[in-house]
Image (cartoon, rainbow, N blue to C red; front, side, top):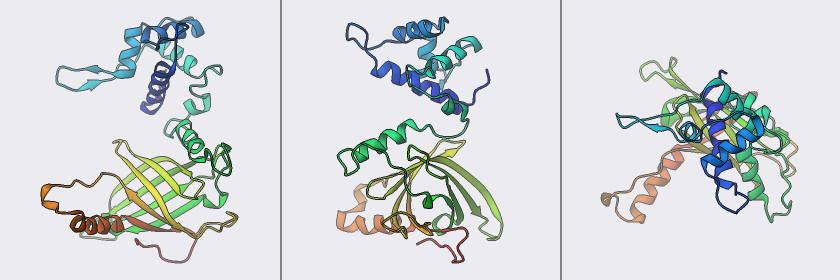
Length: 275
């Protein structure tokens, strides 16, 4: 059974969640033995509890690293069958078919949380279809051009996001020296704030986008042409030499401004630039 690293991580997350939130008939937390028993019950395949733990948590190596052993094909098929079983609701088969896209459980639950006690109650309403499209901007702080592709929102309100960053050659600006790709998902809060969570492939570094302005109408019916997003990854490190908040806040503000990008829809004539 050939699964990508992304799919294996999906299985690990599902097993970890099943163990963390399940309770035995006596009200005790699940152990890995409990998870192994459940898999055997649903699939009639025995997966030793220690092998399961190693698959999910990893094993320390002599050099101080960590490796993630993968079970045999038969056991892996049993784990897939267990985690995608309709009665359990851990993973959908459609999610497992996706080899490089983020699962939708986390964003849907985040949207439910954001909409709780809001005017719309706990109902997840998809954001405007006018958000979908390709947006571009120049990212001066990185000497790069950035393209964002936003999918049409799913019925659950999740927008899949693909980012391509063309880093330009310092000596020959017309030449692309490096191409970086990130993938992730976005949701739109009841306040119409877009939040995107991205992961750089294949290295795994995380960054986020947060919308600060757009030309969307209040009724959400029209196509969005301009989308101003703040891009952020690592937190700012403050040291003894940074002084008081009155001294370092302007520097942080300037850095945030350098990473606030004005995206323009690709079929718009206006030239896109960093804010």
